[in-house]
Length: 207
Image: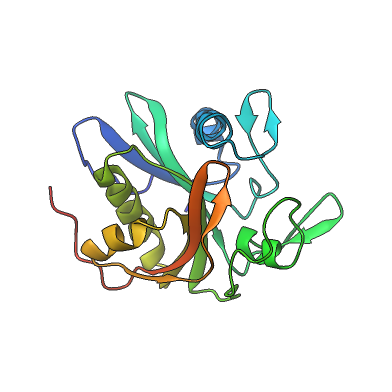
C-alpha cells in the first residue's frame, strides 16, 4: 500500500491518502502529521512522549508502519498510524512488535502494563495508534471508514486501539462491534480504554 489509496470525498475539501513509511511522495505530509501529533497529544492532552524539533516521533514510525492521513487544502488535518500485530523490528538494541503488546511485555517506560488483557499476534488483527480526527464525530467516522477500506481487502478483520470510553457507543451506531479489552486508565488529561474493533460487517457511511 504505497500509492494514493481511497478518496472518500466526505466533503469537497477533505481527502485521504494511505501509504507506507518511507514513501518519498508523502514525506512532507508525514512531517505535518508528526507536528499535529505533537500539538494534540503532547500540548493538549499532556502525554509524556518524545519530541524532536517540534515533531512527535517514536520507535513505531519505521518500516512496518502505514498511515492513513486526512488532507484539507493540501495540509494534514488528521489521520492514524497502522501496524500489523505480527510486526517485529529492532530499535536501539530492543525488539518491538506493536504498542499494546510491548506495553504488556514491559518494554515501554511510563506506559501502563495493565493497559490490555488481550495482545494477539495474528495477521487478521492490526493496531491503530496516534488517531487524530476533528471533534465532530463524523470526522472520526470517515477516518475509520478509510482505515477499513484499506485493511479489509487484505483480509484484516479487527483493529486494536486506545480511545475514549464513549467511543464504543458511537462506533456501535455505525455498525462496528467494539469490545473493551482493558481497564479505564488516565493518559495525560484523557481517560481511555483499549478496545478491539471488528471491521467486517459495517454499513457504508451516509452523508
